[in-house]
Image 1 (cartoon, rainbow, N blue to C red):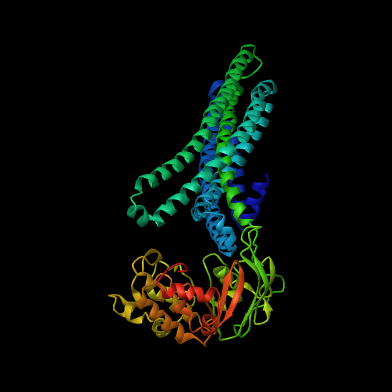
Image 2: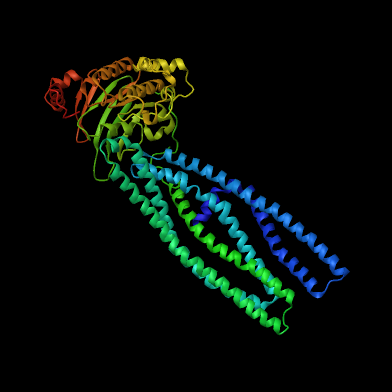
Length: 581
């Protein structure tokens, strides 16, 4: 019931359509209840003998019956189409709402959830709301009202027969309650297994080159096969319960029919019930047990739909760990001064990544972060963009603590170039202008020139309209990296973060990127993270990290002239070794 109430809350904006649907459903149900009564009256007239008056009466009843059937077409159309219209609009809005919620969650959420599973929740699980609103709820209401209306009519016809008709109902309700309790965990597991299967498929498709290169097609296929089998097993366990439940309900309803026919025939033999009433009873009996059987089928579908709805609601109710704080204001004319004040941070409790880190970067200054892998360099970049909040200490931008700044305004003030460059499956121009889609072609080309990628693009057959493929698969690593730099340059953000911008490129491309960095140095605050020390020799200041702490800082010349980790790193790289790369 809690889930249904939450679902109803999500559909509140479509209450107009749903009210019309409900009214149409009620009227349709009423027509279904009236039609057997008219038919039984016609049969009673025929049984009593036909005269002129009876023929006229039958003609009137025939017109009424035909009118009822025509009205049934209208109300069934309204009931079915409007329910589907409301349901599919709800599914569309829920998919958008789930995506909107997901893209606002912190990176920590995505570290603990597979993207394939989130895709499954956004597409597959939201579709269960259509089943709820277009099928389950309208049909459940129709069936419940039909059973109630028929019960009243049956008691009016013959109370004793009506009581016998109701005998199987308590057993059907009890079996339905047991079935719902047993079957939903299996459907819940099936929905989860489908998400896991989607995650495995997405992972395999993303790594298809590695799978083929290392000849791992068979193990990859076996992984997919196992996860597909888990999903199938979960569904079959639920269907096994259904295979027992539905025949049981059918037996109970059939038993009720047998009792009525036998006892009704006995009452007719005694002359205690008219033939027309027995015919009416039999007609209504079909109306009585069909919805009960239908409710048992709907019960199975509802458990499946509720299992999907639970997974959607879990996303919608996920806490936003990083969000706009009360009173947060946008930045006005940001300068790009960054300061860390006694900042400590850990992704996992008890495993610190940064320990009491403090430093300040002045506007327009280029500060480099160096150190071995895992010392917290990239974490500092993530904290600057407030993808995470530190457990201790304060990070400020232009003197204001980051939580005091409106999140959208903060992110707009920071441009990032990451080691694992991500390009969207569009044109080169679209990727460069990603943060500013309304920018001019001239501005796009100017940013490309600064990033030393314009000539490469101009040499391509379609130039800036060249499709890059999924994740930039049609471009080289160096081209993707320089397009990412062009994208960041075009942002015109006061803070630029370069996280291993030259880690995966050749010497010539590295030289081009270094020229790009040199050209934009002084125009914005630059935080550069690098293992290749040649990239950051011109930095205003270099911070050397070890075990989550800053152990050295100064210019390249200052640090190379004093014993310490930086000097050791330079000596290793000069010898051509790759210990720190």
